[in-house]
Length: 120
Image (spheres, rainbow, N blue to C red):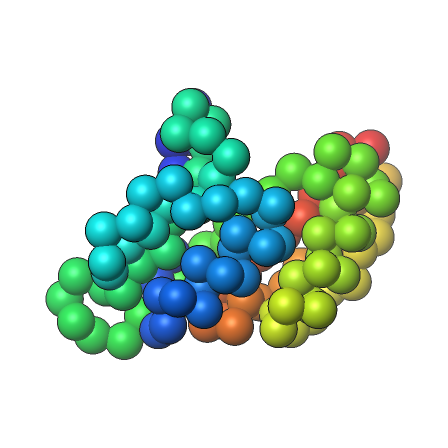
């Protein structure tokens, strides 16, 4: 399945700190303008990068990265942790889609949309 998802950021050091702390992970690969953050290179990772073309990063409309919470409580905890690290609310944690899906939404400090979820 997925190996990693890459998002563009303005401040690579701030992004590495945000995602490592948020996910309880570490920077596994760091090549300057791009870093991969996770718990193991054998598991899915999030990559943060300054765009190759040198232009400012722009979050995509309709693009979102979703992280499993492991439970509704875990999804809510990640949502609140992200807010404490500087993210902004895009939808408080709660049941969605006829109580089949539980999720909370934020935008990271660079405006990338994140979801923390659990299937009910």
